[in-house]
Amino acid sequence: AQKVTQAQTEISVVEKEDVTLDCVYETRDTTYYLFWYKQPPSGELVFLIRRNSFDEQNEISGRYSWNFQKSTSSFNFTITASQVVDSAVYFCALSDQSSFGNEKLTFGTGTRLTIIP
Amino acid sequence: GAVVSQHPSRVICKSGTSVKIECRSLDFQATTMFWYRQFPKQSLMLMATSNEGSKATYEQGVEKDKFLINHASLTLSTLTVTSAHPEDSSFYICSAAARGVYEQYFGPGTRLTVT
Image 1 (cartoon, chains in turn green, cyan):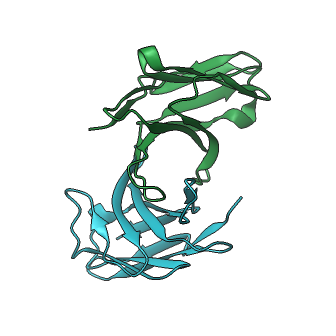
Image 2 (cartoon, rainbow over the protein chains, first blue to last red):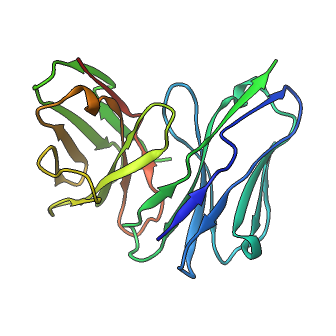
């Protein structure tokens, strides 16, 4: 069975600080995808990134960066120079590639990030 | 990116009544749609997966007679909460995926309150 663990329930940092959100996953599949989503107070899920299990390159997108380490089954997300608009709940998710276009996502419990102005 | 809409965005109903939530893919054909439920301050839990023209596949513990899912067309799936009770109050989110495209696109969610 697949499992995603986000051990940090809530994090608060002062604006402009860097913050890292942890994600650890479990799967027996050799091929899988990892995701991060942002859920602001409005409730709508905002897609941030998808990473294939065969691609361990770290990725940077503006102030966001992701560190994928297959050896430790982790897919951590770092926000540099945080801003108040980054305040939201962030979910890490995992899916397999068993049937193309019909994958189920397993979500972590989420990390509530609060950026203090 | 692709757009998925949900209607209504919020609904309040009395205990014992049924409520229908619509999920539409606006600019692509969604061969598969997923329905999730999210309780306050909790994660998203998959309720069921529906493929166009087929019966939905429900996750363990989800009552198929209570949560009726219909995916009659490639752009519309509906979730009907039958005989709703206060414990069904939750945030319901749908997502849609097109054949051959791995990405799932999420709707904005529907907040159901049963009084």
